[in-house]
Image (cartoon, rainbow, N blue to C red; front, side):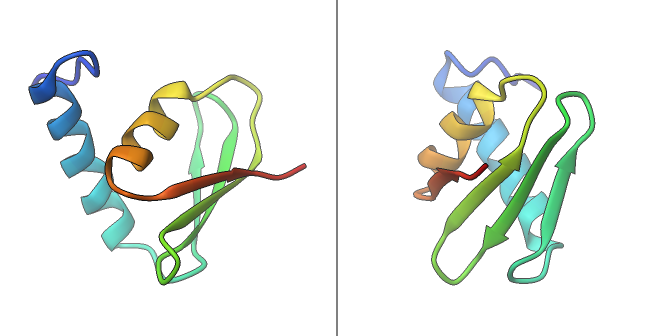
Length: 76
């Protein structure tokens, strides 16, 4: 499956994968991305993702969430 974010198909695939992952979380649930140490709290009602910690940048995550119509907020 193409996950090259620079292509329409790749971005669409990433959006689909991310939406399916978010579907299993409860509102205000927490998603941890091990490869980067990123901790994301999701507010499904407000379509907002709060990134509270990260060791490595997750630029693709922000790109995909914004393509889904979500807002990304960075917290310390």
